[in-house]
Length: 348
Image (cartoon, rainbow, N blue to C red; front, side):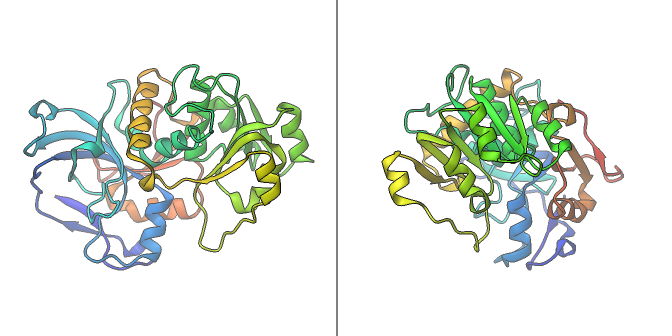
């Protein structure tokens, strides 16, 4: 079978096509015929900066069909369409290969209404978004219709993959959503995702005042992609008892927390790293994402606010470069063809 792999950290051209034997699932594992592999910033950062201990196949997320199961896995899972998450976390085998053996719990049923490109767009973005939206002290631990009624959520980077999922999940759960973006084009995408109010932070004067005009009592939750840059804004708009849920960043990023202000207002600053969250939070996220998918509340594609960019497997290096260059939308690798040109996928 074909796979993309690297043996040392470096630029995208360290990725190479290799041939590997078809793996067999062991106890508690399934083998997935991978159709689409998702590329996330963490995939690119790891390839660029972390030397693997062995041959590393990249990519945490993907989608495909289970074609074999190991012991202790129900045989009726064979033929099940699934979306994959966490494949490359502390493992040498990510989704950038034609067939992947993975723990059964990392292969989640994909509703018939969702295509494989759709499924490969979930994973890190959707589960991270769910976690950020369930950290408020008085909020729900699992999202669903009405779970966030009466609450206001500020989503920074509303045109990014996590921001897109956060907008959709918050709206599905009944929240009022304010999103910030950096251009008029991204404003259109955040609006298409369902945000009730969208502010371009590069052109909006007195951004904090603009947010407070929309949410006079402050926002209950901030879903924050750049906390080091946006800390002052977040402090200015956060309601008492609110939470700033932040993810991403670099080793150099730092924030000074105003102790008295945060204490007197009972405000929380909460970092989110998907692979370190409690097992119950993961289970709630997986269940809520399935429900939202089944309800049609997590659409993708340009008209839904998240353009999809597909590359064939033999052009995975170009897909990584696109992520490094900051392309707007979701970058995916299509394992079903060699000859396809880079293209935008249809919505699903």
